[in-house]
Image (tube, rainbow, N blue to C red):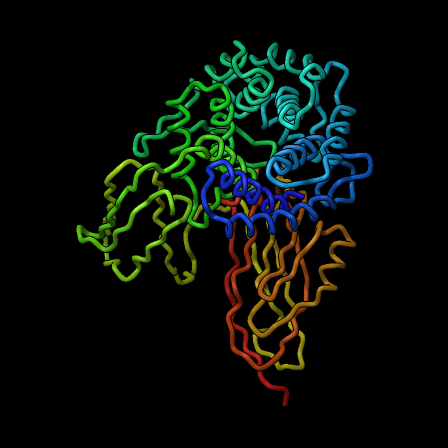
Length: 483
C-alpha cells in the first residue's frame, strides 16, 4: 500500500493546490485526476474485509497504516469523487481497535526495538489515530476521552519533537485555539533548530518515525507536521515561514524529499501554507552565471503555476561557478538549482562500513545466445536496528530478459513480499530485515541476441531512509552468436 500511495498521494495534493490557488492549468488538472483514478482503484485492493488496511492486501489490517489510509482517502474525497463507504469502514475499524481508556497502543508490524526508538508509543499512536479520525470528519464527542488523554500525557513526549508534533496535530484538529494546543506548540517551538545559512528552521526528529524513517527523513516529517499544526492555529507565523523555507530548500533534485512520508507531509505543509497565495503584479528576474547574464524571464498571473526551467550545462567552467538570480518586483518565487554529474566506478574506495552491502555475482561473463546466465544477489544488513522495508533493485543488462518464475518462487518461499519487473529492473520488496541478516537471491537471465554490455546499477536501500543505500559493482557481459 505504501508504494502505491507514493504515486497516488502526491497527485491528490497537486489537484488540491491547483484548485485552491485557482491557477489556470486544465492540462495539469486533467492529468492529475487521471492518475488519481488509477491510484484510487489500486488503493482499494489493500482494504481488508471488515475495514482497515495492511501492507500487501492479504494480511491482518494494521492500526497505524489504516489511520494513514484514512488520511489519504479523506484528503482524496476533498478533490475527487470517491465512495464514502471506505472512509466509514476505516473509521469503524479504528474505533473497534480503541482500548478501554480511549487510546490506541497496538501499532502492528513494527519491531519492538523500533517501537522503543519512536518515543512513547501509546501517546504517539493515539495522537496519530485521533488526528486521522478528526480530519476525516468524525464527531468530536466520540474522541473527547482520547483528546483528554493526549492533554494529560503531553509531558510523556519529553523533548521528542516528532511525538509532540503528532500530539499538536491531534489537538489542533480538535480545537486549534485551545490552551492545550498552544501549549503543545509552544513546547515544540522551543525545540526548533536554526539554520542561519538558509534563514530557516527545522524540527529535528529523534529515533524513528511511524513510517520507519530515520535521520534527515524524520527531520522533514517532523518539520512538516509542526508546520501543519502551527498553520491551523493561525499563530507562529515566523516559525511557519522559516519551516516552509527549510522544506523548500531541502527538496531533492528529483522533486521529492527522499521517503514517501517525508514527501507527502512536506507537500501537505506547503499546500496548507501557500496554496491560496496569488501572484499580483509581474515579477521579472535575471539569471547570471559568473557575473554574466544568461537568461531572463518573468512570473505573472498567467504563468505563476508553471515551472520554468533553464539549462545552464553549457556554461559550467572548471572550479566554482557562481549562479545569481535577481528579482525585480514582489513574488513568492521559489527556485532550485540541480546539478548532475558522472563519476566513474573506482576500485577500493576507502569509506565507513555501510548500513547495507549489496553484491551481484554472475556464473560467467562470456556466453552464447543459447546459454542461460545465472546470477546471485547477496545483501548484508549492518544496521543496529531492524528495518521493516528494504528494497532491492536488480539491474537487467541490455539484451537480456529475466525469468519471472524465479521471483514468484521467492514469494512462495516467503523470501520476499512481492516483486515488479520492467525492461531494465527487477524490484524486490524484502519486508523485515534484521541486524546481521545475509540474504541471497538466485535468478536466471536469458540473452536475446549478441551484445556486449555493462550491467546497470543494482541498488539496495531502506525504503523509509533512502540515504542508507549501496550499489553493486557493474560487470561487463559479452554474448556471442551461437555457433
